Length: 176
Image (tube, rainbow, N blue to C red; front, side, top):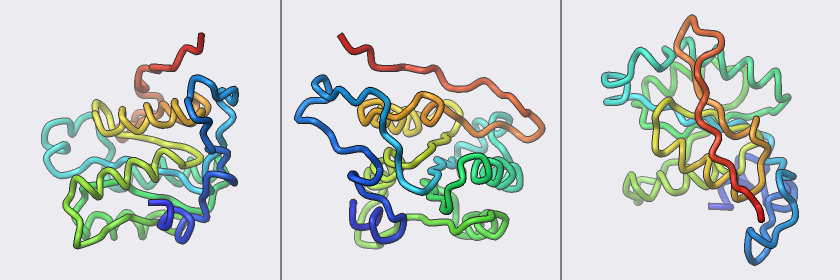
């Protein structure tokens, strides 16, 4: 997990400020995590497009939003957690202004790859997910535990032509 992050995304817990205390309840950091020099986008495709197409951007719309986030955050890479076919991944990659990375290992089942994608996305400088996706929610949950700022965690890709779509609910940890 961390080998891919460090090798391809120049990301590690020390630089990213995501080193955890033995218990997150004892971790006084509270929203001091920075994340690696990359944006992570959970970009749902395939069956999700058929079921929720009106709530998802096109390939071009996704590229536009990610390029805007690259400029806003100043990061130099994008990691995609996606079920997109390779042809769509390649098309999107060509439209983006930064190198795009995707984890794959033919020896692993889709579920194992998803766990790795989730861990990588949990360490991004900024995460943006897909509308109504449980997988996006799980990444947001991990980022909460790691101590990322709310505005770098609870974001979603908007449909084409919608500048300000409804963002995910902010389920934040309340420390006692």
